[in-house]
Image (tube, rainbow, N blue to C red; front, side):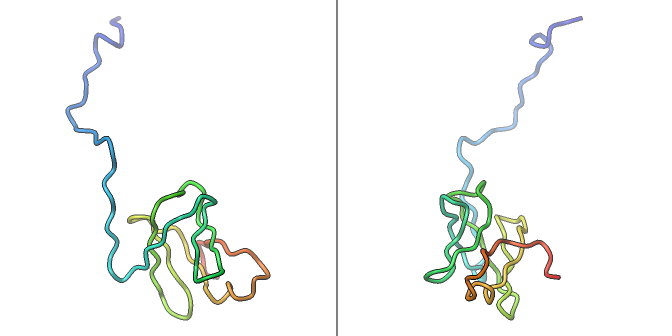
Length: 99
């Protein structure tokens, strides 16, 4: 029947004030996510990634045939097809499956 403050123990693990920058592999194309959650692809096209990644850097890895895998640090986010960007008939978002 003790109070929580009397039994609480502080952690000895250091907590950084700022998270260090992540270095992507040289084979990945590094892009900055804009304020609306998209990345600019080429001169005129945009790919929506996520609004929660505003101001962060993501990495894109080409798989072939215009298909790119997108990562945030070591986390796989999804795919997008750069060939669909040219049609401009639909907005392009990341997809988790290619089928």
